[in-house]
Length: 174
Image (cartoon, rainbow, N blue to C red; front, side, top):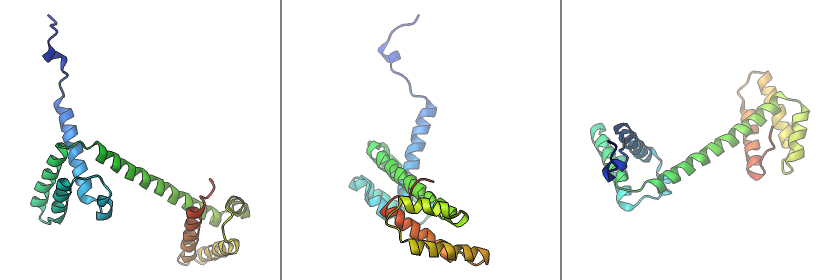
């Protein structure tokens, strides 16, 4: 009963899988249309696809833009999108790393404003290029602003100062 035909040996792709793949390509096309020009320039797009993306981005009418989105998705289906997807994944990874560093600097700012001199000493021991006098002054001013319920201008300056220090030499873990 179970015959071994070459036709049977090919695995059929389910209809649901085809829909998932089509939706993934459509999402990729949407991402391309929503990207800023500078990011789009860094992606590995051939000229024909890039022209279609630029044309779609220039359209303002909703219906026409939607049709052009489908055209961009059609162009993507005809190509191997592995390289493009890898480039987008690398961009996402860089964004996640930048966000993590941003949150780390925020945590240090909050710790310095809430904490005692022990946290400040820990920061100064591990980071050698920091202007100590400026850092202490920013902390003192930010604490004073918080006490007086003023806008956090000094806290913003402290964050900017810590972010610049983090660029030069990464801040230590908390």
